[in-house]
Image (cartoon, rainbow, N blue to C red; front, side, top):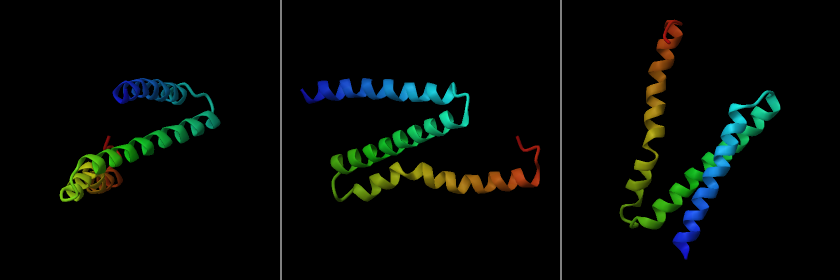
Length: 96
């Protein structure tokens, strides 16, 4: 029963996120774009929160810090990579 409900919820969530993505792609004003960005970030933060809950529920307490660090490692890499990219961009505007 729980797997059926979980599967149906995934499909519903995918359809909702698809509708908000269309809202952002087809906006024709600042108000619609701002609303689409709010929906995007609510969904993104909800997904991130769900991932953290999944990791804490499925990992042993002994390994939890390692698993949470592994899940947030893209944020750490982005922090160090964007510094070099920003410096290159500011020094040479033909960077792109």
